[in-house]
Image (cartoon, rainbow, N blue to C red; front, side, top):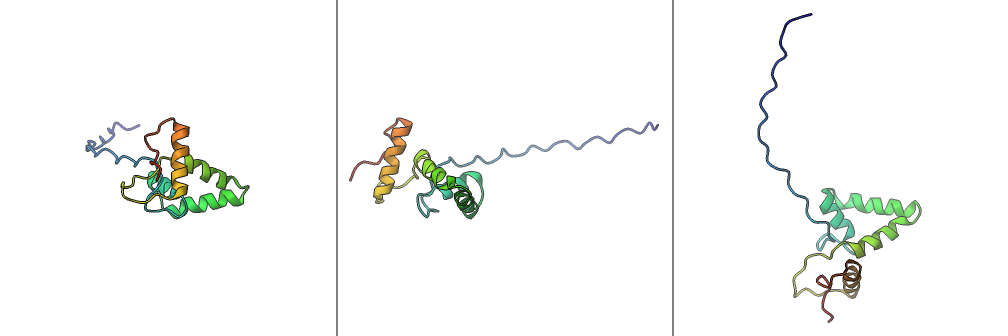
Length: 112
């Protein structure tokens, strides 16, 4: 065989730490119904249309997309909103259910 030495690999350059993912929560800006698809898209770093297509496909393939969407609507924390923004009755219900499931009343909106 040969006595040629293998070339040494170049020294590794220090790299910046990867950017942290945003917290998984419902979206306040990219929402059609409850903001679940927009929030998941922000968390996963993909377009919200892809997540919506996934939910539609799950719905057409047996109906589990609707159940999963409703479950995530309750389990994902509500979007961060200002105190002066109006909250819809469905959003208040979702926040109350989220607080009941998680056992904390801190995220529940005060009644209006």
